[in-house]
Image: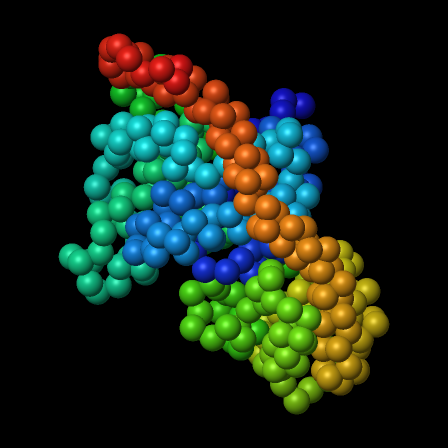
Length: 349
């Protein structure tokens, strides 16, 4: 089988939480053994809305540290901050001239984030899907791990790549495929099981942050919303061993906590439910807290060590930038030739 090329990124906005880890970062660790991967902190995307500069720097380092602490092999797969690979912004402009305004106006996330005040949002909020397309196409990525809410961006990337290829009569850009992970990776809010766990939720008790203390994790799980009924029997699972839509609708917080336990313990749901069926949630929550603390403590320790040694962490990022530039600049060089630009002084090629 041909090796997959995978591009993955996280915005340095807000604290990394359990949803980011289970839904993305931990899965990336498993992908790196058989694929060529690029892991980026997408700081250019972050500034589509105002960011405090010092906070942005801290968050960028924190996310890079989380990648490494979770098990990303930086010697084999570049970990880098997007803004330092200049080809991302340069290709984004070229692709902005390929993409159509109508395509961008139809993007669901733009409509949701802009709301009714579209005239006052930044231009970057509208056009950032072309930057995302550049992120992907620079590395000729074959697959991009995304959640269901990001599939539309991959479809747009394919549309842009196809139009570029058609416009210039050349089969150059690879058509990337979305890589959707299993159902247990969608981690929901601890306060409302119908909403995705989010950095932007005003309640810190809606999420488990990767750097939360043991006491805080315990408090958040203890106060996590449940209901008055005991944990259900595994007989309610469907033929695929997953929760039915009916249970997701009627007991979303219960479904969420059991999914979290299953994902962290790396156990099928039916085994988890066999263990806890009929038990009170106070008992289950104590066990879930112990599991989370046991799992997250070594990651937190390594993250803290990396963040306390800024020179070492910045060296890792700098090395990742240099590795990423080699591939990205090769693509940009090719695109310049295809488009018709004369290269007279760009030294990074």
